[in-house]
Length: 181
Image 1 (cartoon, rainbow, N blue to C red):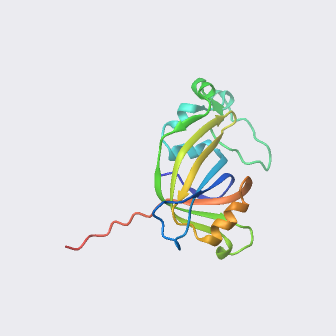
Image 2: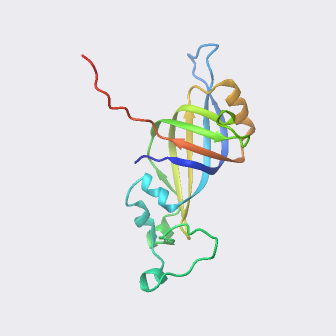
C-alpha cells in the first residue's frame, strides 16, 4: 500500500516554491513545490516498507514481560511498539529514496464545506526524510510538487508558509479496465 493520509492530518508547510518551465504557455497555471513536515505514529512506516517499523522500534519491556502497562485515562495509545531499537536510536534522521506520482492533495482551510478546501491534483511526492523518536512517533518530511496549480490556490498556499495546517493525501486510483482493440 503506498504512502497516504486518509484522514486530515496536522502538518507544517515549511516552504512554498514556484515551479516554472521555460516552455510554459503565457496563460498556463504555475507549478508549486511544497515542503511538508509532520509528526506521525510509527504505524505509518508500513507505507514505506512492511518491516521498517520492527527495524526501528520494539515493544516495551513491561508489555513483553508481563501484564500490559496501564495507560492514562482519556489518552489514546500512540503505538504498540514505542521503544527505539539499538539501530533506531543510532540511525537518526535518514533519507528514504521513494518517488510517488499522481496523488491528490487537499488542505483544510477550516472554513467548513468541501469547496473551501484547497485541492491540488497530479502531485508528485519525493525527497522523504524519516526521523524516528522514542515513544513511537516519527517526523516525516517530504516535498509535494504539481506542475498545474490554479492561481487562486497558489496565492493561498503562499500565505500558509511556516504554518500548521490539516492535510489529506490520496494515492492515485488504479483503474484496470480492458483496452479495446
